[in-house]
Length: 342
Image (cartoon, rainbow, N blue to C red; front, side, top):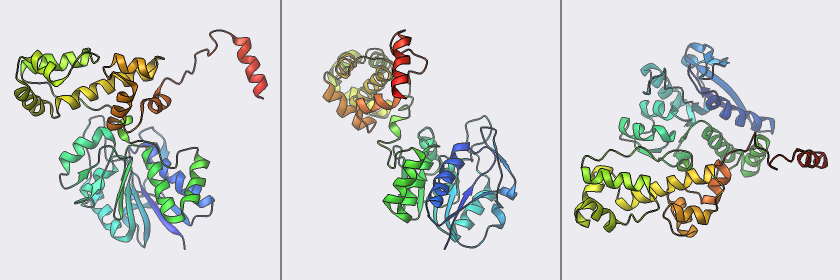
């Protein structure tokens, strides 16, 4: 019995949102999984992706009927150049109708906003692209937004983070249907992790801090940002602001939205990230420069804030090195290595 996978797309969809999940289910089908993948669009029209590539739809959303195994809503709800959600009411109604025919519903990236507009996420946990989580939470207060998750499954509804996270979610759905071995074969064929290490925090910035309205706090925030390696204990910061520790802590938490210690830790992690990405200094040296003191303290902070240790973070995000000569101009040695490899 074929399982019908319907991927909903419309103009402006990020190409990988649609291609990623489609490829996972299609590769699984080539390995024997009973999947039939269909692209559906409003009116059955071809859609133009954000990359400019056109996708041909197999069906119009409005005429889809029968049982659907998995309905996947892509992140095509953001239109135009302005940063603002655009969810068409009639499309949300179609998603609500199709969800009743579906065994399960999933979203990729900002597709979660369309699921929420259709009322499918009320009272559930969900996620979306890290840069949209705050806006998502404001627009849909009945949804519990998990800002760090790569994907979240709550009952028959699953949501995933930005773009490539749709691949992670699709692999999890294949594993749910066909078992871990089948999902592992698909992951190997696509040369991706079956389970990606860490969460979204390692990919995104931790956000803009509100500008303090109190002038004493402005000086403190500036000092922490410019010199993360200095003494920024709560007593030291309170003294710099010429406030009592108790008053400073209350004022800081109210205006910045986090405790002074949390702010210092996140600022130091951010500074260390830049050094890990772009430099060759050892972890111990970076830990001292950024105010952690020891590499172990920095490791614990990275795991709390980003979900991954510093060494793993550097391995994933440091410069690719493409275009650089690994042997500082010794081209003959490079050629010799290439010949020996082959």
